[in-house]
Length: 333
Image 1 (cartoon, one colour):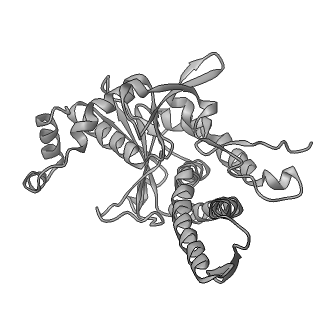
Image 2: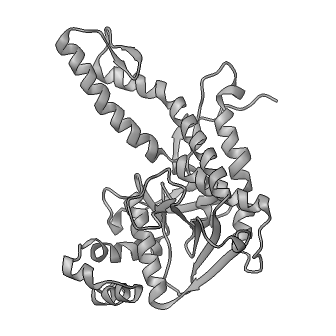
Image 3: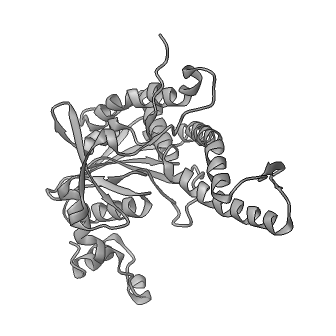
C-alpha cells in the first residue's frame, strides 16, 4: 500500500492534547490563548486537529511518499501510538512498578516531545536570518555575489534578500528536524540509565495545570543556568490538568523502575500550580492551552506572579513555607 502524503503535521501530539480538551462526539476541543495578548476575552476554542501543527514540518526530500514521510511516520509509529497506553499506566493508582519497556517509552515520549516542537526551529531560524541578512548586506557592499558560511559557499547571485532568506529556510528544514531527532535519541539513551519517574497530582478543586505549544519544561537541579542538552536537568510535563510527570535524574537507584506518586493539597497545591503554569507561559512559543477555568485561573495570578520582588524580599524567602507565606501576602493563595 502506497504511503499517504500528510501535509498537516502536528509537533505536539493530539493524543497528548486531548487530555486537556473537552470531548464533543468523536472530536476534542481545547482553549488557546496567545502569549502576545493574554486577556480573558482573547481565549479561543479550537479543535485539537487545528492546533500545534505546521504544514510539511517533517517532510523530507525524496523520490517517493515513503521517503518524504519517513520522519512523520517515525513519530507516529514509534512515539504517538503508545501515548494512550503510557497515559493509562501513569494514571492507574495501582500501577507502581514499570517494566523496562514501559519506562523507556515514558522517557522517550517526554524527551522527543521536548525536542520536536517548533520553538527550537523558530529560535534557530531567527538566528540564521540575522546572520544571513548581515552576510547578504556585506556582499552587496563589497560587490560579491556569494559568501562562505561554515565552509559552504552560498550564492546570492540575482537574488533579493527576502527571497534568499525564504529559500534557505526551506532548504535547511529537513536537516534541522533530523538533527532534533538525533539529539533526542542520544539523550534518551543517557536518561534511561539515570532517570526516575515521579508523578505529582493536584488534589484540590480549582487547582489545575495548563499546557502550551512547548509543553516540556527543563529545570536545573542545582538551580544554575539551564542548558538544553544537559542530562542532569529535571524534565517536567503536565499530562492533564491535574497531573505532572517528572523525569528525575540521578535519583535513588532502588526506585528506578517505580512510579513515585505524590498528592499535593492546600497551599502546596496552589504553589505547584502557580509555578508550573508560569513556566508554561514563559516557555510557550505562541499559545498556552487548557480549558476556560485553568486559563482564567492563570490570568488571575499572572500579574501578581510577574511582579518582581525586591532584593530584601528575595533574601527573606529561604524555604517553600516562606514562598507560600509570601504568596498569601500577594493574594496568590
